[in-house]
Amino acid sequence: MSREKNKVDKKLQIAVRSVGAILPLITLLFGLAMKYDLLPFKISFFTDTMLIFFGLFTILGFATLTLSNRPRLQLVIRIFGAEIVFMLYTLLVTGFASYLAICWLILVYESYRVFREKGMYVSLLVIVVTFCLDFIFKSHAINAELLYNNIVALLLVVGASVFVISMTRAQIEKEANLKLSEEKERTERGRLETLINSMSSSIISFDKNGTIQRFNAASLALLDTHAGIENLSIDQVVKLTDKEGGSVSVIEYARQLPSSAMRDDLYYHYSEETIRVEVIISPVHTAYTGSEDVGGGYIMILRDITKEKSLEEERESFISVVSHELRTPLSIAEGAIGNAIFMNEKGKLTPVVLEKSLHSVHENITSLSHIVNDLTTLSRAESSDSEINETIDVTQLIDELYKRHTSLASQKNLEFNIDRSPTIGSVQTSRLYLTDILEKLISNAFKYTSEGSVTLSAAQNGQTITISVKDTGNGIAKTDLSKIFDKFYRSEDYRTRETGGNGLGLYIASRLADKIHTKIEVTSRYEHGSEFSVTLPVAK
Image (cartoon, rainbow, N blue to C red; front, side, top):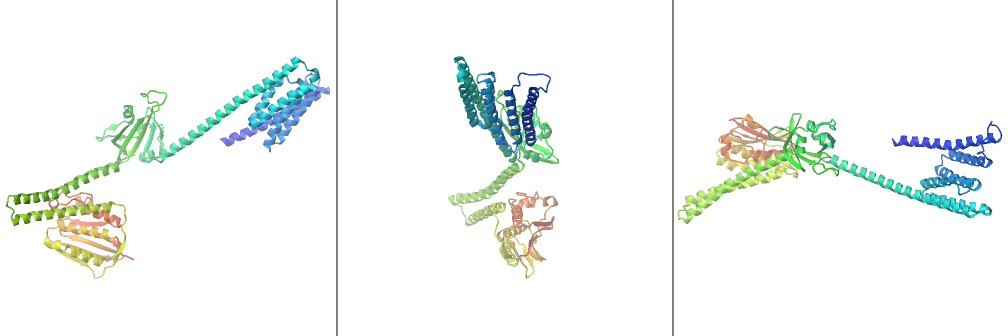
């Protein structure tokens, strides 16, 4: 647009310069034709002096036309050349005090417009010089009236020039300040738009009728659309419902607000998905309306809080479950100790009662220790910290785990078998994480197996090694298989409920498996037992 405007301006300047050169030439030729009786009529205006000046203006016009490639010199010749010609015309024809003195004002203004203060001072100097020369040339015929008229004309021309220049300067400064303000406003607007578009929350502006006016890039992402939503109804685009599934009109809700308000109990539906959103709506009161009038419409901020609320509910559930799991053994241990103290005070504390109390306390303190260990392992599993990998001899690891759990097998009268080839390769992974995973799987196998056996096996399959824990316990129902790795999940089977536990074991194991880039595979048959296995690549 600006390039085309510059082309138009350039053509206009060429046209003006051409007219400025050709018009005096035509007038000069017309005057010469009349002087030499080439025309059938006479006009007294075309005297010899006038013809000379039209000749000078013609020369000046063609000079500026031919110097188009040197714009600075062209301007100097055009402006100051015109002033010199007009000075000669004033001295030789009209005198200083004439009605044409007003032309000096035009020349001074043009000089200031192009060359600013320097041009103005030069033009004023030319006026004063003209006044002085006129006085000198006509000193023989000077009289009080003529002198008075010349001085008045000088003062009027200079005063009017200074006044016009002052007004022009003030206007230029005003325009410059306005332009600067507009530039600052554009810059601030650009910064604000960049800031808004860089925000992850959806921001939508709509008027008091509910018509969308502006929105940021995050709005299209949240609303799952690539189409423009400008000029559409806010209720048509943002379809919200409450907890009961009832429709919530954004514009009706906004109209009821005296000030900003936030809700986090609303849901947004698109395609086949539903997300929970936090909605903040603020009325925009303009400076020209009262506080009750929302002439500026409304600003709405939408934020997807589905994950946030899910984590919040999970955290509350976690606190509730852990509190219960910690409180139960603590209460039992406290009761056993309190009972022993009471019996001792009554003199009825027998060795049998003392032994029973100590066993109860030990058992529950051990249970507390397991819960704390689970919480520590859970924290490690959910952290972003990475563990140092090392080369692990699988044969040695299997033997260590077998020795560590033989006493548990004896306590439960279960067979604990080991099934591995004499030589199995090594794996490159975190020893701590892999050991924790297998510990959880073995502990679970013993916990849910009342008779039969638990088998710990390892086998190399090409470039991978699979370590498995198999039991002959209760097995897992098909309906439970997809949930057993969820946090705090425990089957509704009464036998599972009888064994106790906090529902964290398999969840922790699965999270640790993710951290060492593997998965826990499970196969199970209800009432026949289960098998859990992890597969890792052979160390190179």
